[in-house]
Image 1 (cartoon, rainbow, N blue to C red):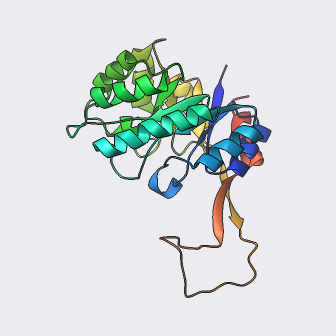
Image 2: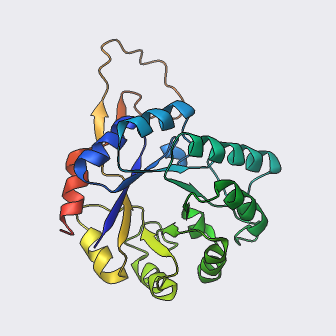
Amino acid sequence: MYRFEICANSVDSCIAAQEGGADRVELCAGIPEGGTTPSYGMIRIARESIEIGLNVIIRPRGGDFLYSENELSQMRHDIMTAKELGADGLVFGCLTPEGKVDMPAMSMLMEAAGDTPVTFHRAFDHTADPFKAMEDIIRLGCVRILTSGCRPTAYEGVRNIAELVRKASDRIIIMPGCGIRENNIRDIAEITGAREFHFSARETARSGMKFRNPLVVMGTEEDPYETAVTTARRVAATIARLG
């Protein structure tokens, strides 16, 4: 009745998603930036490590979804790489300066995707008219839209998601995502009528490093000795709420 996609930030998170009972993963790097294209090595080892579905995000950077010609060329090459490595699906989205779906850019990337199913990601939540955007995305041939209902979290956007599900009918899958966890997934499912859900089910893991230099921090990390990883326990617990 339901399908569950885990936003996985590592190979270990992919394995945990499978162990917890997920149907597929969305493999991402750069989670603090909202998810960016994972490396060749990450995609390859993830594909070798799991049997469930593997969707790969194609996003060259954080920030907005207005891409230059060079960025679009990079995305096209990343699509080809992900396909060659055995990705079951691709996840991307492009917008115009006016907050519309960038149809020429998307058409070019859809052509590169070929028969590989495409999810239009949360760029959708930055569109000026989400219902018009949904119709454009359907025309492009995408199979699903990942959305928080144009709100900070899917729980806050449940009414908008419910309306999208109603208007989409059976033409495209509307998949709620962002902030879905054990204590709200049932309410989101009942209010929206959605049948696919996207969540991360992460917990904090402590580093095994014994020597630590307190004077040096990499990037913008608040604590370089903590990482958030998906756990099979949380995946299973969240899924169980709809069991």
